[in-house]
Image (tube, rainbow, N blue to C red; front, top):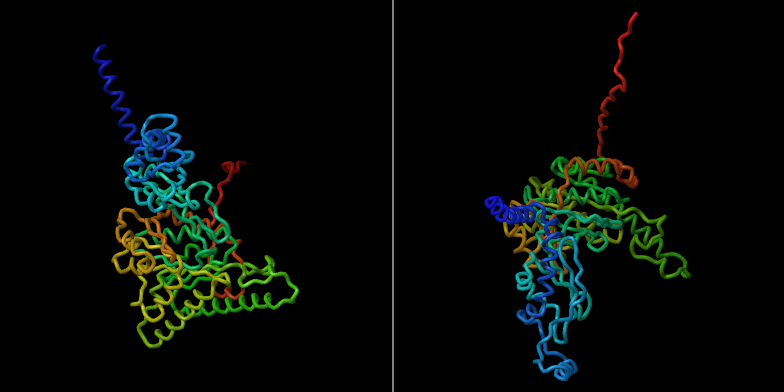
Length: 457
């Protein structure tokens, strides 16, 4: 009996520790909700003042507060930390708003984020300014990029696609209204195709014209042919498709100018400079052009191919410079992109506002994608390990950047989504000659409900 009691006393805690360790690695979200969240809240509440004091985030109290302390008690007047708001738990961490004391700025709190992370025992701490004098601390309890799970309520509006998850557990939304064009770089097996796959599947459910240029004989974009309004699988076909898109852009500008030339008494809200100001009945559907392996459009071997290259690059630059107001957007993908591709490459890259860089084979590729907007982002992209496909660094020309990771989406599921939403493809007569051939889906023969009986005399 004594041996059983001893075994129970030792085995119970060991089993609990083993179960907790397994849950922490195999099911981090469940572990956080049951164990990590209460422990982190208790640690945060108990050590908030001392931690802020140790990080140098406390200030002298106001004169009235100091007088009140001296009048009501004889204890020493201590430094005060920023006033905190309610603790709001989430499925991935905690959110707390802090009202900064006079003389403090958000950069002071951001500089101490790493020390706060160790003090409170969480995976990461991020600081975001809400308004002047108020910042939000976002505590992340575990590595959300190790196994990406998108939030359930992450649907976007028109031309907005939740395509990845940021390291601070927020959703990375590809918004073509704010960033009309984007450059996506990544080496083989880096997750670039998965990013493109999620983006196509998200846009397939919207009334958007999808156009593809895939010079790898269509191996990347052909599975989505049912939803594509046009597809070019070779440089020769791309040279024929791009002038049609430029002509479509010019026709849309003529439509906008016709709206601007209406009667003088027209209200100001009816005068527009892009298609989004047109009435819904007159507004053409937006167009998203996907270009996979853009370097194939630049490579030439003969003088004739060089002339064709120059024409295509000129048309791409025109689409990048003028396409936003006409509702035409570019998604340029490749393994490498820079001035060595030839004339016009740097000018085209300068028009691509959004930048996403997956794992690359050399440092120069990361600098080409992110070095001109955020040198720190280029260094972060070079540190991406091959064991984490889909992990990338996303930035924009404003200088902001963050690590993101795309969730896994099988090719079959993405192709099925495009096939089921094929009826949503807007009709663009100019693109009809370039519509890809979609083979019919084979129908499996149905089995009879009852087994056949032999005929007897």
